[in-house]
Length: 442
Ligand code: AMO
Image (cartoon, rainbow, N blue to C red; front, side, top):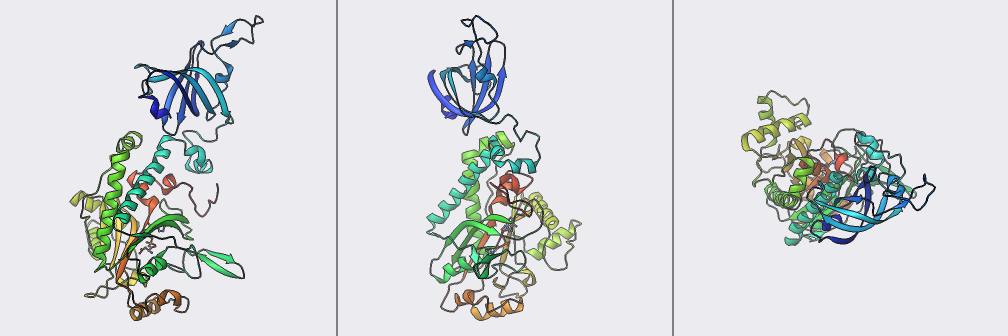
């Protein structure tokens, strides 16, 4: 691999990769070759000679080859040659004097994406777009982040589950629900593993986690919404309140950010110009009502009829927290009962509030969590009050009829975390293949 060349002694080597650039000079040719680990300069300074087609005397050789001149951007080649360390070579201080060059897979000359291509063109040709080193890095970061989260879950003895994405009912709300034909009837695509992660509590699994797809028929074109996204979900038994959920959440975030910083910090600095910050614990917590007051004092009144925040409100409270505590994260616990799903538990001391906790990172909501209502009579009453169809929810309500521990958890959008961590303008930049109202390809 290219990354191994830098510490390799001078001598014969063999590398493969994509042609990034060809500089064709009169007596010397340079090729920049890239694989997924880096880029290296190849040189043909006359070792490779071929007959000059212009010259009738075919024994006169010219120190350049048409094979190299004709290499198109993106062509995949395998090269053998002599590795030489040379401080004057800007690209890592090494170069390879080409001995043989084999074209393994040719690229068409009309590269459909250029450096100045718009996001949509890049999405159309995502496999080419992903060849860019910063895009490659995004998915290495994603791997490291998820691995670190997994390590925390596994160390705590949590069980990984994979819940079905075809369901007989809505999992969050009737809005934003994809309906699909299902033999003689219909099914719905899971908006969240909510019901099934709670089922694991009734099943005696204790802590569980799932990283999987979630679907929302959301017609909006914002930078943070997709119709299919990867949801990071966890749920744990024996919680005393949503404070326990927030503590687990913090532990996971710190582990994920620390691992990313340690493994990729330098490269992120180089390619994105960003210093990854590992958040300090505890994250600030500002009850929602108080957060709205603070935002109002800053001159922004959330223009909503209900008690909820809006995106500008989230940005404002994040700006306040950054100024006051120097923190990029803030929990907004204690949502008003009027704006929560039926499965959240109410605050015993103030039933107008729920034991819900949203997490805001750099001004955008990245997760929703809560302690759940596990008392079936209360749950039924809350579902009825929200106009839910109890018959349709029968299978879910049954989970709570045979003994279930108090529990809570959260769900977090993976792409939102990456977008904000890397200060990207859209989740499209950090989603392998984005799905939106007008995008089903590739
Ligand atoms: P909620 O609906 O708030 O909560 O979703 C949780 C998190 O999922 C992400 N998210 C999205 N990401 C991209 N595109 C979308 N359309 C989209 N919708 C949601 C966000 C959001 O914060 N069952 C609860 C979670 C729980 O209580 O455990 C739920 O789904 O980052």
